[in-house]
Image (cartoon, rainbow, N blue to C red; front, side, top):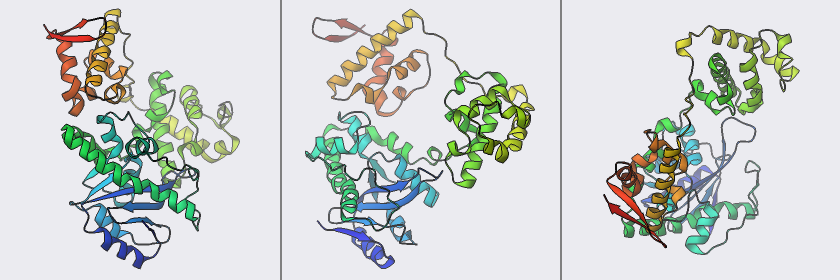
Length: 381
């Protein structure tokens, strides 16, 4: 099938007419984010039963006709690992497509593996080995070579077939509804809204800080986030995480004191030093009752560890019977949360239906596990 490379407004209008009768579209994007805060959209790949196209957003000023298709209530937009693609669309439209299907999530409930990559899924479903020769392409550069366009088109060429195969499997196994909560979460606006006041939680090593150090980190994190957005630069280009930690830990109140912070360059002190001092000063004035608190869980008892081991065995048994990868359903940390009485994914959606309720029944003494030489048996108590 011929690939359409669309780089004119007229060409886009024609393409959209060709796509309009579909009830689903396979979509992927190529973007660049190495030197910016926001991803730079460089290419949109789209396909249906009859059309494969690569749309050049760097050459076409008005994408509204294509966006209208993506945002139609009657159109299902098919992605693989949809999160980053949806983030792009949210930034463009301040809204999300109403109907989304993620083949990575679908593959999870069908036993293909947890967070399976596109190439691996295509190989398992279709027996096709994808070319990886253009994986490091800078998609901002023009013109794109034929090889680059072919590589990009493959991301939707096979996504169409994978989608139809997985959808058929979901229908045959009665697992379509399992994914409704996960797909709804993908199209929840709050998933893509950044709160600068929460950005400190991204800083590696924040858990090593104490009391007032955390509120200083919180305020520094909010300032860095806003500055990165304003300048459209990566967070680390404003201040690196390890520098943020030391600023919070030592709270320097003079430019001279800042020179002792390892990794804080002289140019950064010249550029941001006085502002950082103001941020630290303001943070110190925040009353104690408003300081952020990191919840540090208490150590598990030996009995709790043993219970987690038993629940993990029950998880593996149930997943084996239903041909699902255990790690796709729950991790040991999820099981730990369950034992601690905390909310976790096992208590919601398809995970609860296939195993969560069983784990709860075991913890409540309603069922037991009997060991045999070759297998485990679940018995009602």
